[in-house]
Image 1 (cartoon, each protein chain N blue to C red):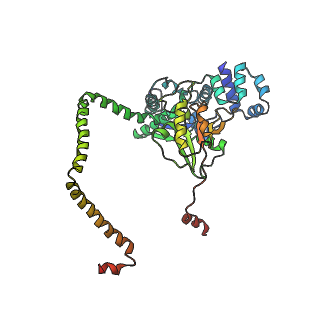
Image 2: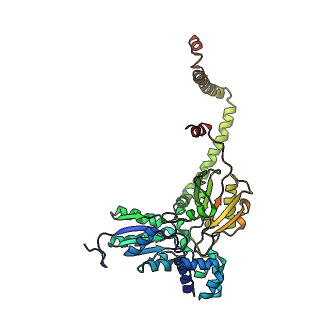
Length: 152
Length: 266
C-alpha cells in the first residue's frame, strides 16, 4: 500500500530516533514495517527515483523551470506570418534573380571602364591615407617630438 | 473587519515558502510556522509522501497538482496556480503557498503570485528554502566562492548560446529535459540532444574532463545520486528531469598582477 510507504517515510523524516535506527540496521526497521516487498526493495535501494516510483509520483512538478524556455518560442510564431506572406513573396524570387544579375553586371562594369573605377577609388583611398598618418603622428610624438611638427 | 465569504478576517496576505528537497527535514522553522499559521495553504511538491507531510502540517492544505496535465502548456499551468493563490488572498485569507525546494528557484508561479499580490496592494513575501543547488554544494563539496559559479537551465544554455567562463564552476539544470516544453511521466533525455550539449561544452573542455551527474536525495533515507563520468560519455547515460550536470572548473587563468599586488600591501 502506498499510504503505508508514505507513513513510513514521514515517520522516518519526523522521528530522528527512528532515522538513526534505520541507518544502523535498515533490514530490522523494514521488517517491522507494513511495506510490500517491492516497497522494501525500493527503500533499501536508497535511490530517490526508486522510492518516488514506489510512491506513484508522476514527476510533473519536477519541471517547474520550464517556463524559462516558453517565452523563447515566440520567434517561431513570428515565422508563421512570414509564411502567410509567402504568395506575395513568390514574386520576390523573380525580383531577386535580377538583383543577382545586377551584381555580376556591376563587376564587369567595374572591369570594363577601368578608367572610371580607379578615378573613383583613388580619391576615396587618398583621403583616409592622408588622415591616418596625421592622426597617428600626434598620438606617438606629442610628448617627445613636438618641435619637428612645427617645422613641417 | 470581516472580509471574504468564509469568515476570513482582515486583508489577505501571502507568504511563499519552500519545503526543501528532502522530505520533512529541510523545511526551515520559519517556513513551518508560516505553513501552520496559514488560513489557506496551497502546495506544489514532488511526490505523494511530501504532499501527505504538508497536509499533516496544515490540514487545510490544498494541492495545486491538479493544475498540471500532460501536454498542457506550462505557462497556462503556472497562471492557473498564481490565479488560485491570488483568489484566496483577495478573499481576505492569510495565505501561504509552499513549493518544494526553494520557492524562488525554478518556480515561476511563486514569483508571479507575489508580484501580482503586491501590485494589488496586499502584503506578500517569500521565505528562502533549501534548493537543489544548496544540496549540490553540500554533497559535491563545491564552494561557489572559489573561482565563481555559473548556473544555467540546460535548454536555455543551448538556446541562448550562453557565454561562460570554463575556469569557474558550471552547473546546468534539467539536463534530462533539454528542449522539452513539458514534463511527461518517466521521461528522460534524448541522446541526440545531449550530444548537442556535449559538443557545445567540448569547445571549452577536453573530452575526458570529469563531469558529475547529480540528483539531490529526495528522502532522508536516500543518498544523493552522484555519478562522475568523462564529458564525452554523457550521452550514454539516462538523464532524468531532476538531474543536474556539474562541470568542475579548468585550471585557473593567470592572475592580474596589478590586482595581486593589492593583497601584498598591508
